[in-house]
Length: 311
Image 1 (cartoon, rainbow, N blue to C red):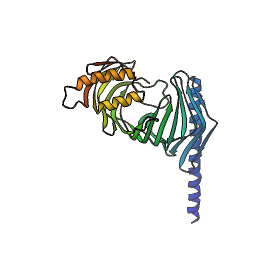
Image 2 (image 1 turned 90 degrees about the vertical axis):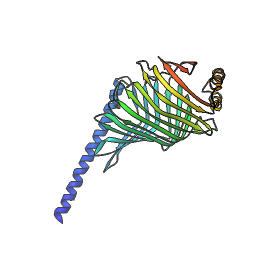
Image 3 (image 1 turned 45 degrees about the vertical axis):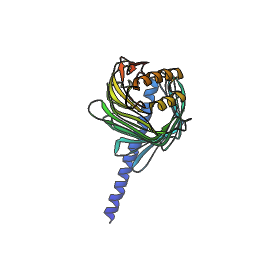
Image 4 (image 1 turned 135 degrees about the horizontal axis):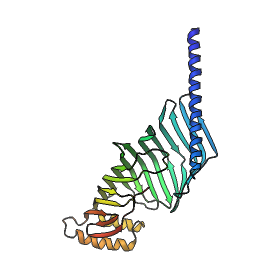
């Protein structure tokens, strides 16, 4: 019995030493990362950094965290941010976000309010294998506006630098709108380099395979499928099939919410009415969206330059 007690005490002391070493390594890794980012011209500041979680976890908590990238013009601030992992598994982390955050960018400040916003990240040799994000409620206000409920998102590495991307929200709407629909996204994106946290150069999109992007709202539905190649400037070449049920109501919704200027909505309605007048279902739109070196055309209707997809 005496020998067993000694063995238990020795094992406890040994494990305590392992935890202390892991906690010290975690703190050192965070401070080294912060110093490296500051040396590169970024801003990393926090009021307090604590590492707890004994005996099995490493729980790292920041208070009053502020990250800024002056070169890109972005600032993220949060009253707290937490990272959790098991002592024996440094490659799998879970993150908990504050219910109120702000992101300031070139277009102004965006406020982020949420309930249950958390994420997970699995890495191997510094490269991302998969990541998940979920929230019961996620609202964006200010420069960018969107309201989501029952939101889940996932990214899984496939072969090379291709990643399967999925997103779903039980309810999605603009914050000032009483109309709420469901959102689904499924596709594969290919980058010019593997995703790895802390990269100085951000990997850029080279190919997008959109299996389905769908927004449904009552008897209105918008579905997109297709693929596109991207050049070094983020300009797209490819074709996407646009299918819309009750497209006039969808167009009116986009116009009234400010997503499409009223003058453009009027031109689109006239052109789409003509394009669908000879079909058996004039309220159903089924047209190719052609992307040619960044310029977009919906069927025969020129839309101008499409947004460039570049990080």
